[in-house]
Amino acid sequence: MAISESTALKYERLDPDVRLMLKVRDDDAVAFEELMRRYQSRLITILQHVVGTRDQAEDLVQDVFLRVYRARKRYVPGAKFSTWLFTIANNVARNALRSSARRHEVNLGPTAGNESSALTLDQLAMAASGQMPTRQFDRNEMADIVRLAVTSLNERQQMAVLLSKFEEMSYADISQVMDLSPQAIKSLLSRARGKLRKILEPYLSLQQVPEDNQP
Image (cartoon, rainbow, N blue to C red; front, side):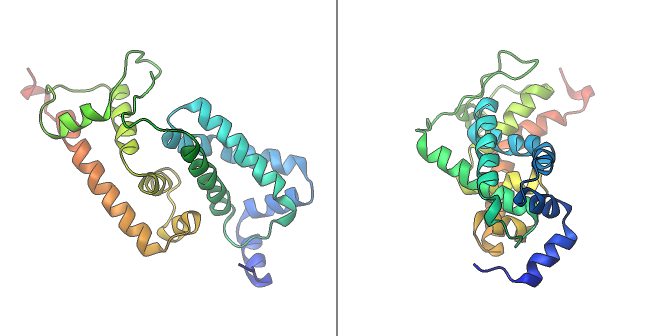
């Protein structure tokens, strides 16, 4: 889609990251390094949730920035820089998911401070049905539970939830990233939040048990 000069000027005026990217277009290496510094950890956070491991997420982020650099000469601002960047990241993530045969059961790797953590989607289902033993979970376990619950969502729901939660993007911005209508994004998020609520409610209710009522 062609981008008008007035639209390009608007985003250049309003978005400092757009101005940095325009310097990258003019082969300013310092500007490119600054954009990487600003967005690298944010991209890793999103992509790690999508693909499951930090190592793979870091590799994909390098691919994202490589695509940004290769596209620099064609860059014309038609959206906020973050929206444009996460559109590239979404495409990279989708390609990665298509190229790997994902198992139906997803195991989380060990997390810092909790080397033995290995929860599965089946365990989440057991909790939701009341078949898991009732106990409180520590912070690392809860982080694993939430992360695994997100992996139970379909590909589109995952990305919409992650962009909403971690990037605090509006429906309009997420719709641009994912090439869907704002109404479709609203529907995706509604279904995703409903599913997450059903999965996580048994765990969250345990965390809220008053100490006097604990054995």
